Every structure is written in structure tokens, then in C-alpha cells.
Image (cartoon, rainbow, N blue to C red; front, side):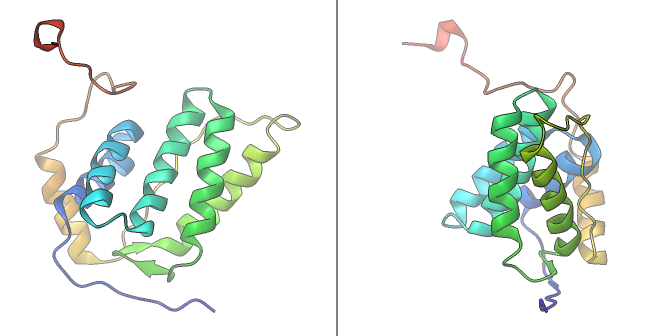
Length: 158
């Protein structure tokens, strides 16, 4: 049985942005951008990496890259299931279940194709929910969503 860990703290602004982009905007490219920055700042914390991989898996599948989606969702599921059911203020048990189902479906995609669908990360900590709500007010959705890294203008290249 997995243990339950409840976080009561001020959450990292990049983590809050990740949750806004994931749940509100379904902007998985931006999820990757903000959580990668946090992952690096947190000395490559494997929990942040696995959360990042869920977003990257969804990004790949939505864009027709089944192989990339499968790899990311398999890795994310494998890593996330080693953590407590509730951590970082979210219902990780639910995300683990859903990532596992997604990974199974992706692995069988050639024989049983299925349409893309989003996942939602359920927030368990009321303090986190409030912080996400406040953060969301300051985050403008990207319209259209970016498809890749923004390259510098030619005038700025050397």
C-alpha cells in the first residue's frame, strides 16, 4: 500500500504555471518549458521529470507522434508509481492510473487505435488550489499554442 503525503507549503511558481498550462490551457509544450526549468533548478528531481514526461507524452500523441508518446508515457508511469498517492498537493494515484491506461493504449495503438484525449491533474491541497487560481490570473493562454522552441530573429543571430 502506498503512503499518503500531504504538502502544506508555498509552491514553486513554475510548478503553479505547469498546473495552469496542464489543466486550464492543455498547453503541453509550455508545461514542458516551465517544468524543465524547475526540474533543472531542483537538481533534476525525478518526480518533476516524470510529471514533465506526462505532458510531453500528451503533446506527442496530440501531434500524431505515437512512438514518442508511448516512450514518454511508459517512462512517466514507471517513475510516478514509485511516489506516494498524494504528493506536491496533487492526487498522484489518479494520475498514475490514468498514465498507465494511456501507456497501455499507446502500446497497443497499431492494433487498436484510439482518439487523443486530455488528462487532468486533480489538486488535493486547498492551498495549492488557491495558489494555482492566483497564478492563473497572471498567465495568458498562448493562442495559438507553440509547436516548438522559439527561434531568435535573424537580426539577433551571429
